[in-house]
Length: 120
Image 1 (cartoon, rainbow, N blue to C red):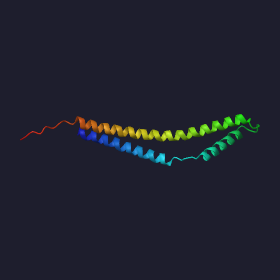
Image 2: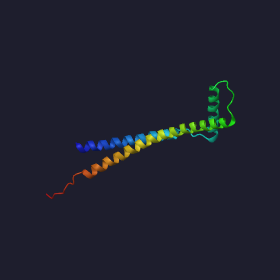
Image 3: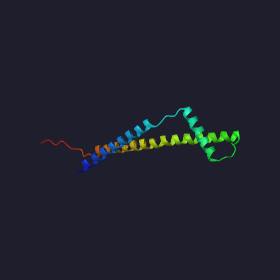
Image 4: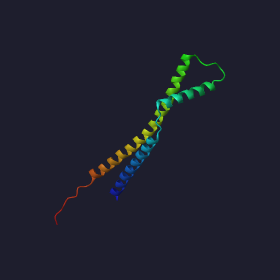
């Protein structure tokens, strides 16, 4: 009975790990891939929205505008990296479960009592 429970735990860990890795792989596959033109357009759009929020004031000087543009670009890239890191966290969790399943299976194999073949 005890061995059966250990095998079940190893199987459940393996199934959960494979499921998590599969789910994360699907999420990774479905992540959008943005081109440089997409990033530039998004940066300009966000910059225009931020400038519109500031109100009816005059436009900032050119060097400050470039600084704001670089800051917007950095925020957009950070958001994309955050999405990728979130998916990779799920992959790491699934792989950790698989490692635990392999460790559980190996401990079962190593702790099995050695049966002696007794002649009748």
